Amino acid sequence: MTILSFSELIERCKKENKRIYEIALEEEAFLQAETLDVIRIKTLETLLAMKDAIKDGLKSSEKSISNWCGDDCIKLQNKYKKTPALFGKIFEKITTYALATAEENLRMGRIVACPTAGSCGIVPSVIVAVAEEENISETEQINGLLTAGLVGLIVSNKVQLAGAVAGCQAECGVASAMAAAALTQMLGGNVDEILQATALALKNILGLTCDPVCGLVEVPCIKRNAFLAIHAVTASELALCGVESKIPLDEIVDTLKITGQLMSPLLKETSQGGLAKTKTALDLEKKLFNNKQ
Amino acid sequence: MEQKSIFSVISPIMVGPSSSHTAGAVRLGLMAKNIYNNDFAKVKFILYNSFATTGFGHGTDKGLLAGVLGYGVDDISIKNIFSIVNNVEYSYEYMQDISRHPNSVDIIIDDKMTISGDSIGAGEIRINNINGFATDIDGSYDTLLLMYKDKPGMISMVSDIIQKRRVNIASLHCGRNSKGGTASMYLALDVPIGDDVVEIVKQIDDVFFVTNIRKLK
Image (cartoon, rainbow over all chains, first blue to last red; front, side, top):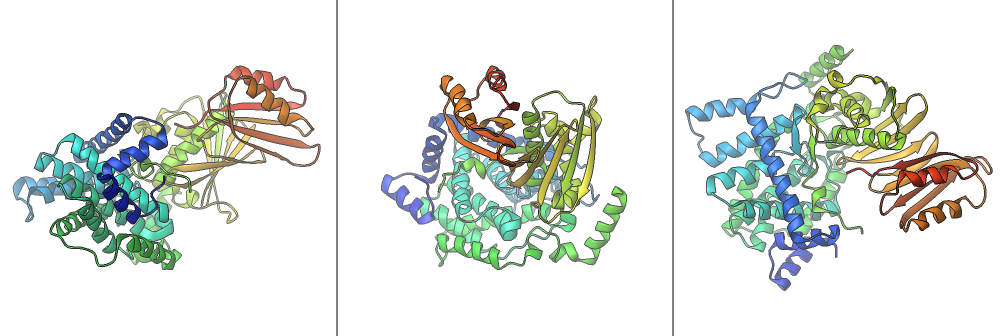
């Protein structure tokens, strides 16, 4: 009973009068030959691992191998202790948590790939920050994560979620769409609104390349996690106001795939183009390789 | 189309920074350990292509070593594995070979067994060669692997032994280097079999290597 498209998902939700997370639970329980409770517990374990990664990341300022990254999260925390962010507490927490997780990833800390390790900060930062500030229950956070999971899975049925296949569209881009879905679920949006939020987020990352400096999951990956976490909130807010994507979600996913195919291999996780080929990036590469030998 | 799990997009729980270059490396190491299935004193890793060029920034070297030593993908000790390991001598070589997958490795244990595999993305792996024999093992099944002198009747003898244990064979693959030469067989099983079965299969004439490969968690 694989759900291959979002139109199938909507149809099923309407026919059975169910939420997306309920379909996700049923499908997963069927696949794993387990009860719904077992799947809920597994999802909770994933959620708790996400929270642990945020906690670990908030405490550390250990730099990365390039000596370029690892101390930005601390900068945010220090600043927000003194003066609040323009957009308020939720903005502060989302950006801080996204950087905390992405920095923890680069220093070989424990994180949850969601959908990939390079995009690990986006979904957790949105779910956890909003849950803390809006007093959203653990059950509802799990529902959000399940919603994100099914949304990401349907995209991955059409396009492999790897920078080498479709650029950063398929990593941080899809993570942002998943986070938009989770958030809209947690804020009480209906099925249409959840998938509109997904569509709006996904549509606005089309063409995003994967050009990591020196092939490391650092520049531009880490800060991109904070940007695309906030991007997810924009999508969710618009959808909850009734804004709709004129292009249906399934067609956006197809576009993402085709755009990935049209994208030069130089811009798909090979570090042969884009930011990876800037003068500064090449200088760093020389320095790193000299240190290594 | 085979149905996939939502946990393929909201996991694994792993140490960073890369699912293909770190988690995949750990899992390749773990599979090599499970295939060798014995104590060892020496291990050499030959890293190819992207594993060779960007692996050091992703802890691929640490991940491979941690894997063969039995650490899981979410073990935070991986970061410090070089200061933890003792009693095992380890070395690395770096190669470019466009005929190989971008993220590819040979793991040579005790100069006796060479296990080759690829990290194919999102932490998924494939073991595609063991001591010169083509395989396609992804770690999702408990697998019985044997090498023997090519001769008629071997498949029925082995499957008979497994059938007596009431274990279902999910898939079976055979290959050989030449008619009457050396052959290999691997059977993916729905449930694990005991090491006593390995001993029984070893008793079959002309079987010279058998191992019981545990699936990856």
